[in-house]
Image (cartoon, rainbow, N blue to C red; front, side, top):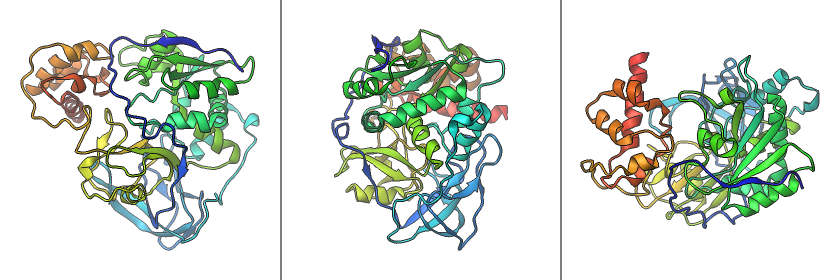
Length: 449
């Protein structure tokens, strides 16, 4: 066993403790999903410039083969999730509505799950820059939902020293348990990824933050860490949003990321535990990110669980496979109920950043189904009491109602809001505060461009 766990029960100020609702899936082993007959692969599945197609209509490709290349350092390539033929490159709808260019791939019937394209390397012989290039070539992006290219996360600006890799194993969103199962079933992959992450950063130590409601995951990780290895498990109180970068850094290390700043400014880089598992599994094999583990759950799911889903799988196909046959996209949330988004169409694909698919009784977010009409603010102060970054959501909401978006940003730190949904969750007046803040940010960005 490695170093003992520490900081048991530590947390951050404020936040909320919504019902976990993970019983449906947390004990279910990860299962494979079958291949859909047709895959839809958007060229934009990551933060940054879209990938550039390498294929053309009618071309045959094999599972794992590059089908789109990175357009510069702030981009990642795309690989075929199945063996099949290219139907074309067309504009296709996305989860939020606007269409984007996508490669359409027709799956060869009866094809196996075997990856046909791989280029193994001696990772220990690589320089830090070469390791970053290898991570980029694998098309790996953050598995926590933001889809930020992983090689960029590890590419710390010159002059900045990182002493700690923090790994987010909290998974504090209700319903989601994919990271939990990953830590139990793919423990060695997680730790192999942590070691590669430390190598990429030149960081001398790593800390894996896990909430105290996951004792089996904590035991699995602690049992697999080598004696004397500079990797620790930090046990944290189960609370939302414990897994947010700034909250996690504060809870684990007692360091305060400055307003408007990033974790590397206090010597830390944060990555999701699912991302570590992808690094640890894919890089030694020379394979690319073509599938991911997703929680599929909610009252509308007949066969809930955690599934290994090929990237590009149409949402409608996935839902049929788990026993949901409805046609109302407003019932579907990609991600968790607090920070996830409803979809515009059921035919949109699963992308690299989708961590969960929830089927709810009715449209839900930051309140799991509450759709009451907003009422006037009663100045109860609950939103102020729970905001994890210490903002005044009530005042921001009043300014949003007056369309004073610039004041929200300049005087009330709007951009420090990471849209966790705590304020909307506790609001007795059902004011959709998070939605107001998203609109204000978007309009401010539009004004500044």
